[in-house]
Image (cartoon, rainbow, N blue to C red):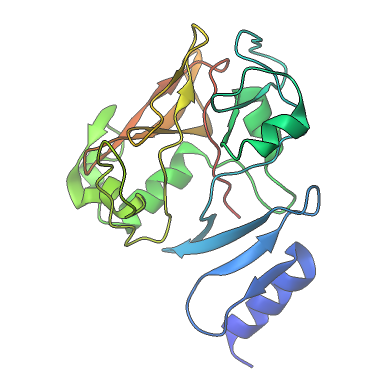
Length: 223
């Protein structure tokens, strides 16, 4: 029996993952809410190929915490979880929510997890630890969806990560960066009083910076 077959069987038994016979992409079903996610292998890692959509409760902008989990839905200003889910908009997490929301068998990626992926996609090792925009290897372009957006998002999705414009919840209660321009992702790694984040926009690169734990960003889980 091939190693890949054994790995697939283990994934099915432990994580509820289904594997395709060919290729590296399968699916995972979150037993908490029934949401199903595509997966992608990049280098030696397996990532969700979609943003996490787990939403046990929802709060309107203006409800903040640096210590307690708070969940938001892009452009939703109410407090009904069912109503928020019906919008079809993406879930945004403050950091306390982000670090506890990945399903069993998955985790919020560390800064090093992201750097390993960036290196696998062709980033110059000399750029990995830089703060701000890093453009070598066109990693951002490879991560971003190749769908048409206005303004242009500029992705080719050659990695299969399929990042889409997800926006964010800013510190003054505004939803920003949606509609084709920005994606913000949490990591679990501290950066002073903040956390390291990743930011994609219309450029071909990927930004490494910091975000306050009370902001609302998206989550991608890694296995």
